[in-house]
Length: 268
Image 1 (cartoon, one colour):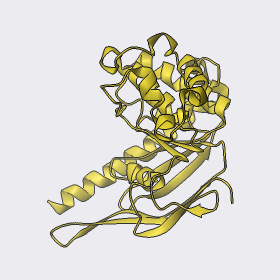
Image 2 (image 1 turned 90 degrees about the vertical axis):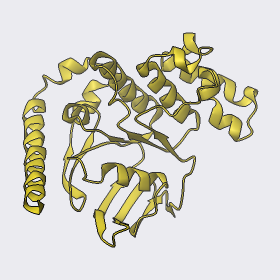
Image 3 (image 1 turned 60 degrees about the horizontal axis):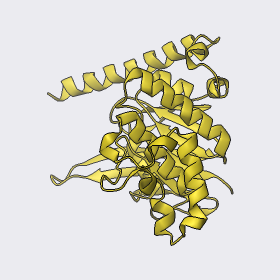
Image 4 (image 1 turned 45 degrees about the horizontal axis):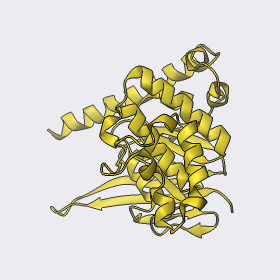
């Protein structure tokens, strides 16, 4: 089966005191090639844990991840990761960072040069290719991280709160860029976020996860990502159904947070 399949994934963390935490339980999902999924939920619902399992950084205690029919057993270039902080190489300039993956594969500049320069142009980095990383703003650094991921030509891009540290205006511009690259490249994207508005704008499919143990609480299929491609995201927020869906999800997550707080008080 093509695409990414999450099959009955469970994850338990055993603690030094002999107790354990069930981070995820029986999470199942199939993503077809080219789908854009956003995932949100209250703190502790296992969003990042699920992403790390999909990336191959963690081995689940139950279930499996399959990619295009084969079981995921570790990190692989078919699955690229964009972290909340760019995790860039400070001693390399922008172009060297973006071309790192192809160079590690043994490709020559004749093989990767045009593609890397194209990615620098479409991410707005063409005029900054010789700049050192420390000379760039946070938003520009995240553009470098995204371009570096795309340079490896992964089938799936996994994004862990990639825009969370940006100011509001830069974040909106980056949201538009993510939609543009999704549509132009046809990549499958899974984006973790704490922002309900961002999840609505950047998810043609949206998962709300519930905590303790982490599981899928509700899934939405939404039109807003398609509407936002090449458009004004502030206008998308005025579209029919956007505000009511946002309020529904906010109330859902608020109720979960209240339940978590209630449990914490009972334990004291």
